Amino acid sequence: MAIHLADDRRDHLIRSLQGYFLEEFDEELSSFRSGELVDWFVERLAPPVYNQGVQDARRHLQTRLDDLEGEVYAPEVF
Image (cartoon, rainbow, N blue to C red; front, side, top):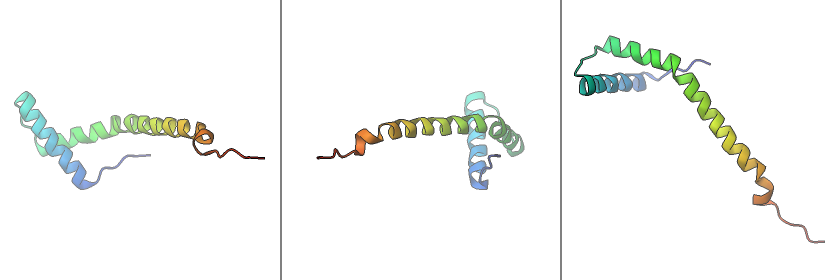
């Protein structure tokens, strides 16, 4: 599954990266260089971060499902 950023989100990340480089390293990055870096990060970092989020959500839901009986079980009276 390829991760695709919406154009406005990508543009925001490019501007943020340019601001970060200017503030932290006193270096101006062109839109092209910033865009290439954003694309590189998305290609290399987004899948493992996304997968970790999916695993965290699965683990949380599984914990809630494991306790489902304790949460919603109504004792039967005979």
